[in-house]
Image 1: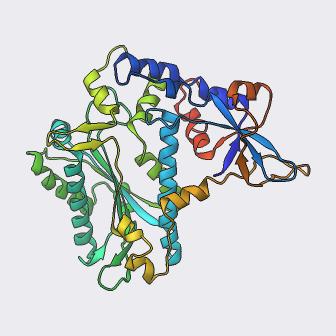
Image 2 (image 1 turned 135 degrees about the vertical axis):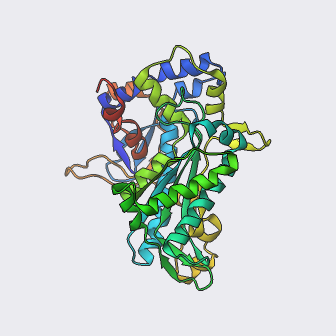
Image 3 (image 1 turned 60 degrees about the vertical axis):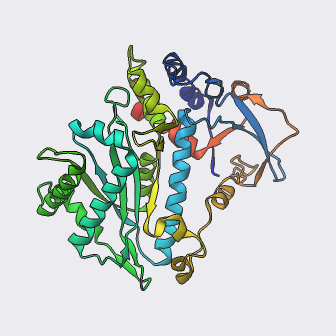
Amino acid sequence: MHQVLVTESEYVRRKTFHREDYITFLFKHGVRADYDGIRSCGEVAVPWQCEGQERHVVYRRWGCRDPDCSPCSLARAMNQAKYDVYKIESVYRRLNRAVRFVEFDYTVPEDMRSVVYRRGMEAFEKLVVHCFDEYVREMFDVPDSVQLCIIITPQYWSSDEPLTKGPLPHVHGVLFSLGFDKKTGEPFDVPVMEFGRFAKHPRDPNFEVLRGSWRSALKTYGEPPSKVNVWVNYGAGTRTLYKRLQYFFRSPTSDVYKWIEIHGVPESVDECWLRELLAPERVDDNGKLRRSQKMRYYGWLAPRNCSPNAPLMQRYGITLKSRTDYRCEESVINCPCLDRKGRVCGCIMERSHNLPRKPVVDVLEEGLPFMVAESWYEAQIAPLAEFDPGG
């Protein structure tokens, strides 16, 4: 796990980021009865010591890992995105292909949002997958025997206005250029670059066909309006893919936290919607339990197709690490301190049980080396200029 040394000013900026306002807001409206874990997140620093000759001691931030904690929630989404990118990149590299994909977003007309939301996001997600899969096969002559690779993340809230707009069901998805024939196991290249024309030419006839198919599919929930919105965009490269998956995997906690940071604590809010938005578990009208966020994988990214015993992986000699093994390797921490020659030490670090923990404030005031995980740094420090109204 790559660690970053941070200065006192950087860490204090994150600490002053309206966390108390966020906790007070949630406590006031009865979402939860206890927020001590979130309030103490990042208050304690744990000592780690490297195995090198100089035996550097570095203090590391200790997080609460609470699902309602925005920093921990964002870091969790980043870790999931990194693991998915690792699997995708491994398969593409084995077949000597560049990572190409098209991201899509299916939305619902305003007067149908409540109906779609109450019937459950699972049914809505399946409708989107069926509609898009059918369109791709018909438009690009993809045989039925070819498995398309798709990642789907249904979301039920607005990222810009999570507290005021109420339910906003929509589905984010990614279709990859690499598919496989289920019968022969041969790779099949989906021409996803064709979707790049849609962004430049919104009135492209093929784009109109895509919108028309979505309008027909929405008749399941009633009579849709004459115009429905579908957004598509072509992308390439693992860095772009990682950023998009990180955005798709975020939780509503992150968007509520960001909204309060920008706009401040609202004077009034729909408490029923707030509890439904942030509750980790909810039950829909069909009596089914729904989680706050789901990621579904279709095609060769499905868990059963990524296992070492899967025929596809055996055919091409691909061995993908399990999430546990990947996290274990990622959790290895290399010393970020400089040695006597001014080079990064890089030795493996282990948590020290002989040295006591210290409050982060004391560590920073004493000028001791203090590190945080790179995912936490990216989530909390790098985006500050984008979200901080005063910055």
